[in-house]
Amino acid sequence: MPKTKIKSKCVVDLFIEIMGNKWKILIIWNLKNHTLRFSDLQKKMHGVNSNTLTSHLRELETRKIISRVVFPEVPPRVEYSLTEYGNALFPVFDEIRIWGIHYLECEGMEMKIC
Image (tube, rainbow, N blue to C red; front, top):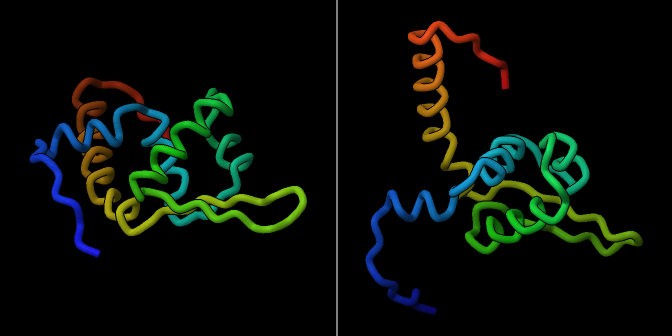
């Protein structure tokens, strides 16, 4: 089936549209090299409520950044992991991290390990 042609879009706008807030970035960061259940992911993301987390997980799944697997158990078990698109973000995140370290060092600020 051929892909549907979409309107042109600025790639920076696209990135902001998909990644647009801290929760989505933290979801992706916490799924690096891990497959996590909803509750485990929520524990790693201090301060996020379940509605917000659910909403962002759905958006990232729709964008094919993460995958969601539901196991036919009672109660249902759901696991989240990164797709190829999600894993491809880590070189970008690594560069952002390098920039952040440089900024903190130049400003004489202490770095928090994350």
